[in-house]
Amino acid sequence: MNIITIIGARPQFIKAVMVSRAIERHNKQYPSQAITERLLHTGQHYDDEMSAIFFRQLQIPTPTWNLNCTLPESMTEKIITILRQERPDQVLVYGDTNSTLAGALAAHQLNIPLIHIEAGLRSYNQEMPEEKNRIIADQLSSILFCPTPKAIDNLRKEGIIHGVFWVGDVMFDAAKALSTSCDILQRLCIHKPFYLLTIHRAENTNHIERLMSILQALQSVSTPIIWPMHPRTRKTISENKSLQELLFECRSIRVIDSQGYLEMATLEKEASLILTDSGGVQKEAYFHKTPCLTLREETEWQETIIAGSNLLVGTDSNRILEGIQNPPDSFMPISDFGDGHAAEKIVQIIANNNL
Ligand code: UDP
Image (tube, rainbow, N blue to C red; front, side):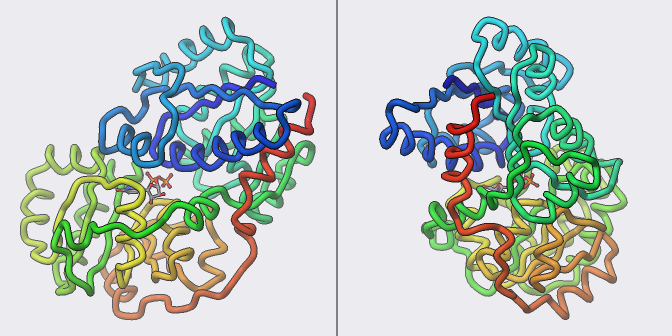
């Protein structure tokens, strides 16, 4: 069997590493059923801090193709050209980014069966580009791997019931298997206690007033706040003087570059509180037992709210400060994210499914 896996953004590199490694193990164990996987990197995330570091650190093989394509409009056409030449048996996409959408549309155009990992997630916020991407990817997929039982329910509500599997979350696999601690605290002289902040979602970075409101809340916090800044957020701040001035007044905030996976996992484990608008970081906060305040009004990861580790505070200053004063403090064990072997289950199902 011959698969082309389409990746392009930071969280996809992390998810793909688990599945690619499981494919390698499968091929050693069952050579007669070997799966040939080749990686296609769209180039959506392209620089060292958002892309190359993950390939180096997680030893991801160099992609067979790199489209160097940051614009969603031209991505689909470029992927179609490659798929038309290569005619893989299946195309594999992850998550909800522009690369996911482009890969799904390209496979659909050429009638190549599509596999979607992290299917069925919904925020029910139609304004999020990610929500639109994941709905289309789910509608076009032949095999849908859901990270949680709730994702299965979401798909059922939309009438998608065939080819749907609950396997667990490959990011939980990654958190268990990869996130050994590293020396970032010593290297950057970060002392405990500290909070960890990440902001990158368009719904926040494209609304200056929301970023202002988050920073206004953090202005009065005395605990040091470490902020690995996403390039998109850096760009927004660099273009807005009021944001720059406000950030300067937030004496507790220390901005650092976006980090590699191991550095980030260490920061998440050692922080006493995480403030984030990232989907992956909300879950990792739960996996690493660090309380989390989510800087959004909704989450695709309701399980973390039910488990008691995560609180939705949006971007309102008062709600953020209330959250900091009364952080969530429960880490109810739940099995929704699987047993840390989602990737093996995915590979087994792919190998047994002759589409
Ligand atoms: N991450 C990272 N370095 C950072 C920030 C995040 O390695 O500086 C990791 C994080 O640990 C998680 C993933 O990136 O595994 C989450 O990706 P992101 O926040 O970009 O996207 P989302 O999960 O919201 O789709």
